[in-house]
Image (cartoon, rainbow, N blue to C red):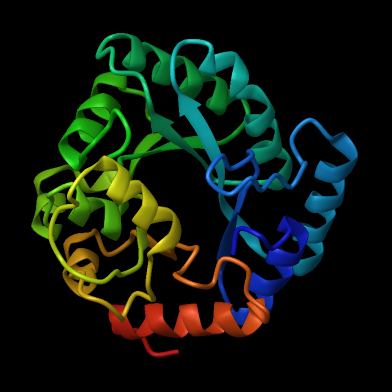
Length: 260
């Protein structure tokens, strides 16, 4: 639902029955969407009021792209937005191949995030420098900051050659929350660009498709918060976002074995 403006998304999530929602506040290169909230005090204040009036909790905002040490300074506007919105996490991606520098960058961003009352969730993706779960865990562990976690995504785990059982290899506290969806076909992606395209345009409801989403959920700690990742295939600009959100929540309940 990337095209849905954040204030409207807060209302949609609340009406559909979600406990949390999240916002993509940085411009999206793949879609060209920019909700013009960052650096706009008036827009951010209006969004904060909308969130408060809907009574919805904000789980995360995104995204910090850790390309090099300049990402520390560049992260400040998003961290300020996270603080204003009460977001628990800010999503970060690793796009620096230097194994020492990227850990130092993450540590500095984590320190800045702590000053803003939030935490960092590092997401691994085949088309990033944290290509798989093991690499992501290594980066987060080496960073050593208490407010940094690993963000596991059922699609990215599968397409990077992982298996849900891999999640059990690491400390449960690393997985404070996780993203679920499904997709056609199982197994690793052919290449990074294929994985990128599918992540943006090819996701399905959690109980559709061929990914082992139930096994993914079962391998996570029981206290892990589950989120439904979108945009879904053919639904990047939904005509009825509330109906779609309700369907997404119902799908998540079915695959997680939760009664609505």
